[in-house]
Image (cartoon, rainbow, N blue to C red; front, side, top):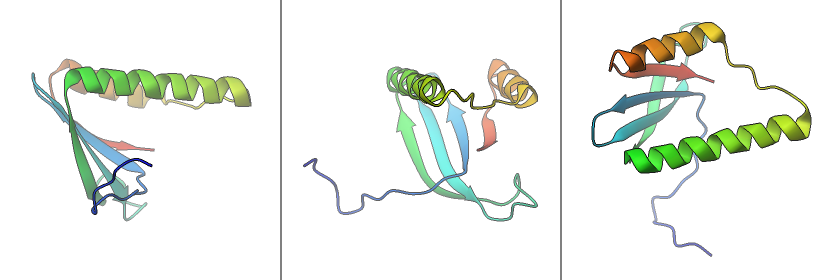
Length: 102
């Protein structure tokens, strides 16, 4: 049984945001409170700070998990091309990826 702090909890999240610097990556997870205003009604629940090495490993693990899911279910998880282009432009400009909704 793993050790857990008294404050450990699982949360539900349908939104996230990311900040980054040369030394770390910060990912905030939250909930869209008003679906009619998804970009203006995110309540942040928790933020996690990663080293770039840890963030890269997390990205790899998530990519493999989704690939296995798509293979096993013969279903492709859609990723909107316009949303992907928006994220690429923000990161390439060195700016924060402010909001992601899933």
